[in-house]
Image (tube, rainbow, N blue to C red; front, side, top):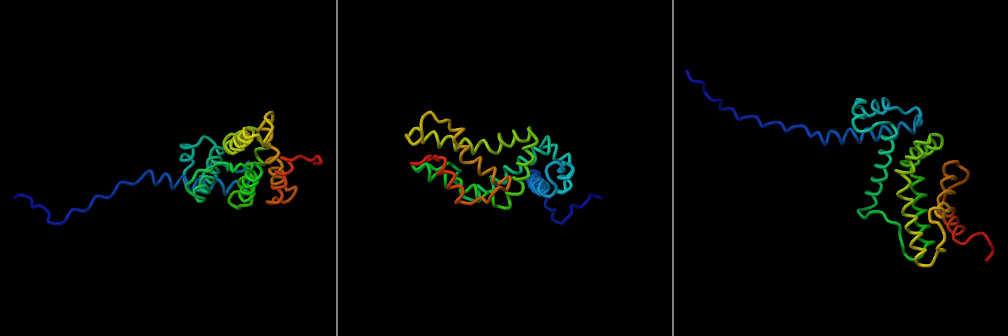
Length: 214
């Protein structure tokens, strides 16, 4: 007797799992876990195992994408900055050049003050910066991956000012930019005084006009 064909409609095939989406979800969880842990327990006590447990993934998942906890934290912090830039708008960040060097640098430093006082950035960036003081390798990575892109923007703006005759041509822009950012970084990291718009505006005035009577 021939078998009869079923009259029941075939069940639709279940879609295959989206591995890209699943990986992105895990990546986000790892970023969040790494940033939270470095704030709660500090960089030395933050471990790949701890990040994995906090994120709800296996540590092999982390080692599939990163070679160390430093790499995880660095990428997590870079991602945090990229998210902030996306929230600010679709236009990529550039150092303003209105022709007024003082006003342009003051505006950028004011934005830096806002970021340094933002709870999302302050605690993890302070933890990483403090560890970078005693951990030379991490310190170098912080400069190369996090600070250098911003430093390059300062250098570019100062060179434009040199071209416009607003800054002496023999000035080294890489050294000159430290008059703006190094005092701010020290005050923020060591709590030697409050950081504010008034403070960074004064840094610019002192750096551009000097301390001698005019």
